[in-house]
Length: 244
Length: 165
Image (tube, chains in turn brown, green):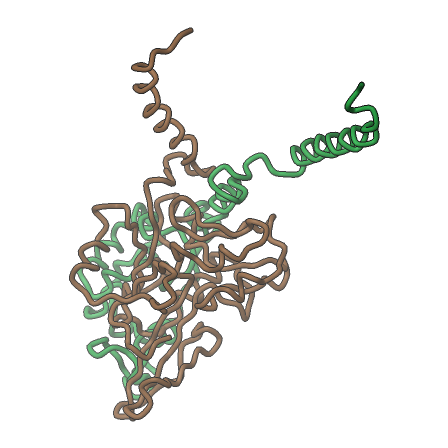
């Protein structure tokens, strides 16, 4: 068979498209899910968080997170006029059972900040893994392959947000998967499902119809530690400057 | 005159290297998982494995397929945005076996207080009460229908009618 130069030029783009489909693939059990059609992140509206701890409990239930470890947790900040840069931060048991009450009129400002893996697009944690056990999936979710992880904890040290831990039984790194087993089936994450005020919202940045686009356009949204250029995809609305 | 006359020992070494390299290729074929490198420097099959974990929270869409009456009540009130499992807990098992897995009756004294206990740390405008001050000792659902809190309780809940319609 002979292929003319003209034919070859016509075939090459087709082959490239086909190869892209081969690369994109589909995870098992969710046949209609296309990894190349999504770019996941999360919108967190600090102004709506009431610190009830529903997200923390839901996450632990959904993902079998061991006691004392957290894939998501809630912090309560307290800043005073004199110490804007040194806020007092508490998170008793990750905020799982709520927070001690604060009386009206107490000095300073109080607010809650839910935290979770930022699913960074340029994640420091995946860069340091010596064995390729943690990676950014084609849809932007940072995942850990528990069968490949050695438990060396380099990634635990590398994460600037403290989102990773070594699982006490499995002895491998563990963290938020953005409920990958849910979002690939068209559900939202367990924390978003359980949040009563809508302070957390799963966002698909590749979906033009996702309300995240309008929200980002119209609100002062910030990511955590922007100076580290991690490409964090947990977007915080109404974030106070004292939050680290 | 043969240029390689005294190079026999070098060829033997070369042979050893080639053998070792072939052995490495064969071992590598067995040791490295098939899907490694499919999408990048990791095991591609791991994505599917993580994606196929069990779901515990069914999601409010699943609840609403049977409990449309509650969804209707909820849609008229302030708890419209609160999804079912935010209060009722994970009920994926109930959606798979509605007969044998029955949700437990909730304790409103604990549940309502979890969100609505007054604290200056909560956002302004979020409805808050001091449970010790706000009709202490009276159960919340005496006055409030949890599915539409600004209305008095009625008997229109699924549970009161003996299950989903």
